Image (cartoon, protein in one colour):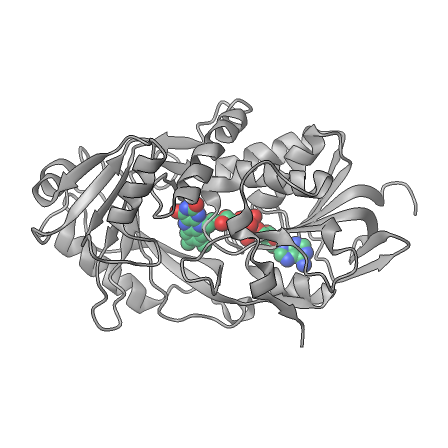
Length: 397
Ligand SMILES: Cc1cc2nc3c(=O)[nH]c(=O)nc-3n(C[C@H](O)[C@H](O)[C@H](O)COP(=O)(O)OP(=O)(O)OC[C@H]3O[C@@H](n4cnc5c(N)ncnc54)[C@H](O)[C@@H]3O)c2cc1C
């Protein structure tokens, strides 16, 4: 194999997870190639738009623990750039305490936070209105506020990782390089792209919502649905109002899933506006190829109605609409899938995978975990809950 084509590890997918994995691999002196089918920092995968929620509340203690464990890795990433990667405004979870949604349940989250010694304050319905600017909430609503919640600048996060990798003598970044074939020969993987064929002993697969197109090259697939989530920005009519990151738990009403979440105003993303989105899937896709860049009008309408009825200081007409595509595993609470390839794939323990779920908050930590799995075959972090490939990977038919 000619020089420039042989690597220790090839990372397939150049989103934040791929860039973070390359960063951690290179810190361990590993010659790494990252292959991206489009351009780096594109708008066509799960990292479209800019802001993501960083929140510690989760209904399961192991998730709370994992978010806590991600904090030092965020601090490390922040030390590489003067650009703030997060705006710490706190997380507000509120709504009907009896609702158990795909995001969890307020009471369970309180128990998990207590068990992990995470400080938070409980909030009642009148405080939700007087302190956090919501209105017309049922008096039975409760909430919790956790101060370390933040809005993540995912674009700046990717830029930081991209520039660090670009400077590294150990990392090669190639864009416009869709992987079209993977073969295992002579104890190596041969990975084919229009830019040529590259070889490595190990692979990391982080293809975001295009997971099956890559897994298919190794004859397996993941049980997932795809969601083209709609979001929009709302103009602040009262410049003094600042919301935390928030999520509201409510029962569905007809086809309105009735769960919404939002962000503070941030300097890096349409200043003067705040982003509010729905968190219920109205039109699941069977494959990313069905995706259009047009947001679902009904998801936008239900969100705008909620903004109008329950938020203050905003013009309830949605502006700057966009979509973002995510693969959600058929695991009920949409957890992450972090595993090796299934056993029927040749050299399966040499292929580490991250797929599905809401993982923006885990970008720096997951890169470390995937680098550990690749180089050591294990990681000190407890990922036993996410090693679910045995359930969700099946042979390609
Ligand atoms: C609307 C929306 C809101 C979200 N909100 C939150 C949130 O508030 N908090 C949170 O923690 N998480 C959130 N998430 C999840 C988070 O954004 C994702 O988990 C994260 O961005 C995934 O990064 P990734 O690198 O795995 O995937 P991606 O960014 O999709 O990157 C995968 C890359 O792989 C490339 N690729 C695919 N196939 C190939 C191939 N054959 N060859 C080469 N390259 C290939 C793709 O082009 C893509 O660039 C949200 C996601 C969405 C869509």
